[in-house]
Image (cartoon, rainbow, N blue to C red; front, side, top):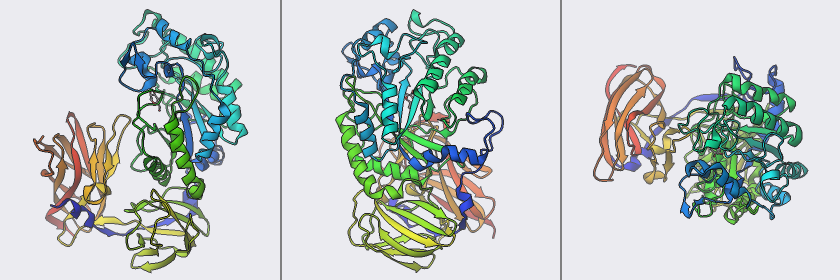
Length: 601
Ligand code: GLC
């Protein structure tokens, strides 16, 4: 099978009605532990509390601390892993790590400049590490001497001035706080297989519960009462349980309106899901969410990490995330002198230039009503009697015709957002076709603003069988489901599209399609790369076990994955689930389903 035959799948429609009421996030519906700081919160109260976050879409994450001094190098050796983990990764003794603090003197730090960099990039909030896993607080603390005022020559609070600068310039402000891991204060959690009370240094010995009561709880109280942030961003709930998390959670009542994430532990769900370093295949239902990501390969500054993502990736990531209903929290790792690295500033300026022109298509928008769009992404604003679709075109059509699949609402006008140039729209069968100017105004993402009246109606167009009864489901039609550690992703477009870096068995891949008949299908995959592995091929309640043998060559090869049945005609999902014990991984171009026998119409 030729790889690009995956592109030729035909599609089917499904009418969806986007009544405005459905657009407002639904009630929490979380039983058991309170999900938020305010236990008895109504849906309207929650919507009001989350409103700024849902509007904002784009924020700056800042990982800053003593680790910026070694900046990835210890005793002349480059230490593998993310910069802020250097103390644990290199097992640096506590006293030696403290010596780095004596060189932490960020005299070039200017909070107003940092806020301006974020603001000019179009970011509406920032979240900074007030304490990372090394236990060092960037604010003065009465609960531990391991803080900026007492352990560094700088001696001054770094957090409150940033909070004030952010608020002065109209940005919201969040504090990241590592509540469990603390590699300095005795008893703090260590992760990575360490037992409670243990560490790599005698100085670590102590009770975790004592640490929580004497350090974490008082410090969180200091943050909430002295700094007064808008977000409390917990991280890594190792060794946590409900009993341990509760005193921390209860403190949140000190700061009505605060937003928290899902990383406190002990069953507390917080307000937001936090996919890290990946963009989920779809959103999280009614849950608010925020993807956090680095701009290079580290959160905390590493002097030699030059693995910078191009601006195109940053802008398209933002658009992709917002089109799925999430926020993008994009990281910078300042130096020990207090400067945001120049490559980050450069990229943020470029993102900002795009946001200046296209911000209307980002802020305050909600998720795309379409299933998948081959040329880009969509965001929307909907009112009770109409609204706006923002079509973010990544691949400008060569013939100038942009097909909007299954759009049934009455289009009243359309224009190129950047140039205000009018665009004509005409119905074409099940679709609307927009006649675009010949040149894209932006090589990365050009936005077409489409106004419609009445309720938003979109037909969900899922792949259907070809004339010969086969389903051809390419990599671009797949949903890739990663987890914290899995990084599978789509690479290339059209004939070159493939799912790559599928080396972690926690990642799953699925396709939605529409079957007109029930029946049994033979599943074949086109794979590339030398690896292999065992996997389950799942269709509804049916599944079969398959194996992709390792190969010598990296050429494309077709592998038989056995048969599965579609029990009932209609929308179906085929899923490939790696076997955790037997997985090396491979690149995947797509699958085909060939009917073996039809059981019913
Ligand atoms: C992880 C890491 C940490 C980083 C964070 C950002 O949990 O432990 O270093 O701060 O992710 O989301």
